[in-house]
Image 1 (cartoon, rainbow, N blue to C red):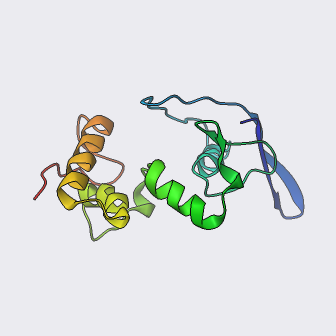
Image 2: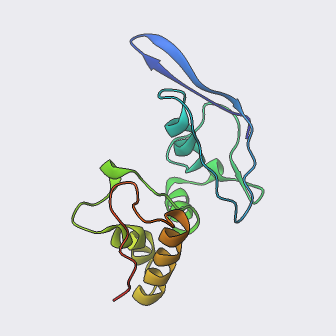
Length: 141
């Protein structure tokens, strides 16, 4: 990656990511931890293709994802990347299972298969229940 990202705040340049070089392998579960304001969210946004880095590359299976146009990036996010947001990004009218199912439903995957995949994700991510904001309901209808 060797990713660089900065922002200008009140006329001052703030270097948030400086030379991030990270490999994440298939099947690996990774936690990004650190104090408030150190760049965790910015790193996740760049890795998730929500923000472009100022410099450096983000590779997925050897492909430079930021060479994709916006439509290809949106498709890449929907089909390849899984986001688990904290409370303020969840849709409050849905439970944790339904929120986790949304990308699959948007993609057009069969509801039963989407539900089973969402159950597996929640069970693996929150084995003792209690998610970021909602307790996962783990029963497909």
